[in-house]
Length: 640
Image (cartoon, rainbow, N blue to C red; front, side):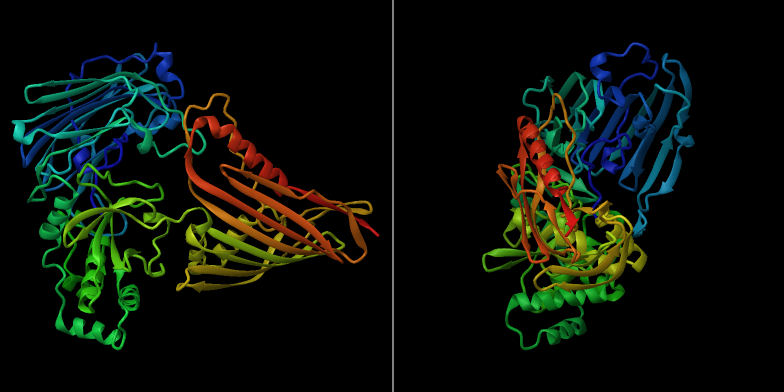
């Protein structure tokens, strides 16, 4: 993955470019005996002062100074007791200090840089990494306490201009926030994009070669169920300069087209060369095949079978891939190296593919279409075909061709084409595309036990949630099924089998199981829940006065059909009515019919993705309550 600016300055300042420093004097006192109720409400920590000054001396020199003074109110705020800075040959830590105060503002201890731990910034999978970390973690003995972290960093990586979050995360308030930029002349004046500042109380002041932002008394955002990603609602600033340097590489970029041209020329140019023997080998693999998509599938499978993923972060390695020749020789690479290597192999067999930079992760993060700035943490490929793109993640040894799952789906990415960079949205797995079909046959016995034969077929993001099960151990598979069907007590998995159709991207499961005492016996009667295989009891919590909108990220469609064979000497005494619900959030239907000695149960639930206003939350909660109630419906049998 790329070295990247973290989306928010979490107390731990992990990244190079987030290395900040101090502007205020250390002798300022911050007692926590009389804190403002507006700041303590919903907060685990209060940033008494959050300050950064960025001095851009030239296009290849930047000094970042900052101080963060945080009062930690409880154990959940202890993440603020961990402070980190990274450094390498392009990024030097000039100073770093932590001072801890008790609730009265009395100094407890001071930790200079020599008291910080200094370690290699390995991540467990990196083969090479020349970044190092200094870090300090304070272990509190009482609450509240206040921790002040000051630092100064000097870097030539001016392309990584620190972002600014007036508010860093949920459950964290800010008493005072200050962000300043000093620049030498109009030619290097940074360009600032203000995000989510509508209705936000802040002050901006511009003077000669200086820009200042300040804000005070910002209350904490309380996390609420289904809250949007904090990055999407936080008041923040993005900053860039047209001319910058990255790991010794100079650049001058005004838009995404120029950004893509720079990536192609400075980072990718000449790195797609292959040995003649390799070219001959892959050309032989596709001999007799004319369709470029079929060729691409063969090459993708070849890469999966002959390489493995590691992270490589040396020098400009956070952005520049190692050469295709090197990957071919050692048979490993990071996301950039494997994407570049696969692109080179595709080129060798006459298939065009484009290098793609993306913000990967389960939370969808878009590249801003009108603000070309260094960003992203992952690389994939886009293969143009019939006026659309096939997206492939070259780091996965198990993903089907053209399937990227929830890691990079449905977000704006930078596609590096021969004509420059373009912002394009990746494939979206939404609503009915995320389909799961469950069918089952259940034998209900007189002793209240059940024997079950179940089949599950999953597509879209639901495929992503299921298909890795075939890579797991038997113990983990059994544990997974017991968790999946946690509504069935005394569950015993008898046997299972899988079928992974990578061409259609469908994962099929066939499971045989049984359970004792599933139904409840009461004299001549037997009571049992009719939804055995896909019970959904989720009801979001109630809020008297919800503050935030809520988001359904992807949506899905579940369809269930189950045949329940009753004991021969029993008949139905009572059963629930059929249910049909339709609204803006989706739909739900449940139908029960009886045929001779069988109960036929059909269920269908669809959920629609979307960002919904807070005023709709009660209606959504009511919708889920109705579903939970219907899914918990029971049938009463009586001996005939």
